[in-house]
Image (tube, rainbow, N blue to C red; front, side, top):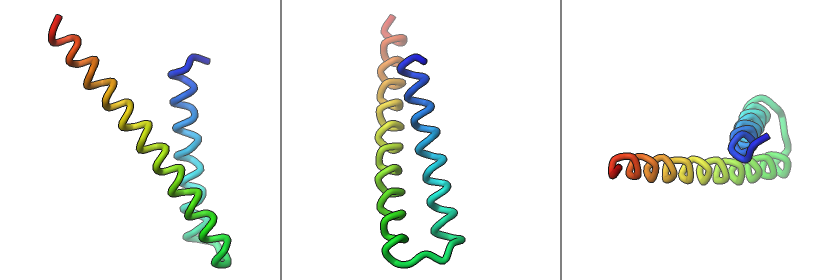
Length: 70
């Protein structure tokens, strides 16, 4: 698997886990400690996904600029 494919797969796995966490927090009768741990995990994954999206946006912007100058 290429680095790009691995990055996409990793991103998809993180999104899937965020969905699972959201479902657990919405549907389960969790105690406060469990809820906080899940929330913390979800926020961390959200930040990682946001960072990946920002890097992808930067790369696309750079590619667009390089094609315009040629």
